[in-house]
Image 1: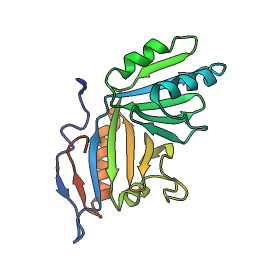
Image 2: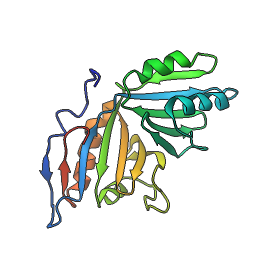
Image 3: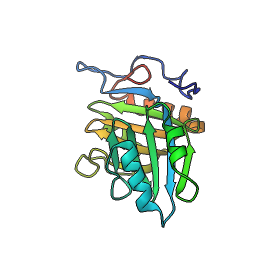
Length: 200
């Protein structure tokens, strides 16, 4: 693991909070601490070759349009706009690897690891909690697994990735991480929530 300083290290204290019923907490929330978060960008005339390089390096198929993600053992590649990607990876050295492969004529690599905070939320009521703040339809038929959205939760901007039917990963600007954590956990009180250790 890198030597990053994590925005939610003090706030994300393990325990069970809120109105957990007989079935236990409806959601589990943890601070997500990937090794790297990189924003990648291609130029309009290099997008095809750029995506071919990403596909080869990351051992995945680059999604065909924004709003989708592809996942491999190398990381999760989220397409956030045409020719713009967010890579979330636990692979050591991935930043240096891609920076060495991508030159300025082909695209750009921007390390956002210090600039973003990650949160993972999972459980039977995860979508119910998020619906309290998002103006998007999180029904599994409308927002299926590996869907991606750039949206807001109570005016706090973030990137949302649904990793399975009941699990979401959220990436927030670091400066808003604590305010977002407070809003998210307040919304979860109704269902009861468990804070798990980082990375769980």
